[in-house]
Image (cartoon, rainbow, N blue to C red):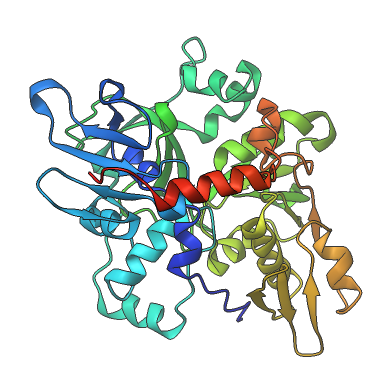
Length: 396
């Protein structure tokens, strides 16, 4: 079933993904000795083992960020990802599709849907397959819970409850780090075999294990103790941390016959369909982020569980939604169910339980990290900034 053709352009992605975001995920660190101003230096490695240094400009404006090295090489976030493409779990028919997929993951936006091209790529390319032998794993010790959990606001009780669905993982092939990160195992419908991990580490590190199957598998925490037929509510989130935060904040209202799901920053029809096959009597819930990408994910979830083919297009004011019988604009700050239901008959197989409007996602809500209001600059400040851009001084 086709659920839409939501396309992502590089310009849209560059506004949300900075070179520094990508560099930090690859292990670069900020060299404060070089100063923190219009330019920052990011270094890979320490001391005599420095393997790379990049100088990044416009650190506060992701869309305008560029980098250069003292050897003369330079570029933007697209070229930086292209240099390091082998470090990411990237799929696509060609190099540019792979780069777009990596950027979509960093931006927490749906992966670009290439339709036939993607199917062709799957048939012709030899995709990287997850190798469980590559990763050392161990369970969480309830007496030595990793500090990252408390930093993200999680109580010891939450971690202990969800510990059966979490592992500590270490990549045997990572020569830069031999410690353990937090791994959320991915499984597919009808199998307990692990086919990848959503990985989180200190310093904002997030990734997926090499070869992780993000098209048919997801992180699923079945709190019915394996009695899938008893599950009545399945809560879909964009990350495992969001799912944990949602659980902690609403636990007294949820009961035991539930399942928490993370799609890991991607959204695949087969991911959702596989999850719902496990829980045939359950209702799906949209717990996605309070941003445009989250609304698109909610619409795609609705299209799948309600069996209503939808075409979703981004506009200057929000989203355009088209079905066989209707075409209408959707405001991202209002309930999508309320709006869609006035145009298209729905059976209410999906619910919405999104973060409060002041918060981007459930983990930010748990941490009390509100969305920063956009402050309009005065005419004087705009003129001063314009003058600064016109006379930037000595070029580096």
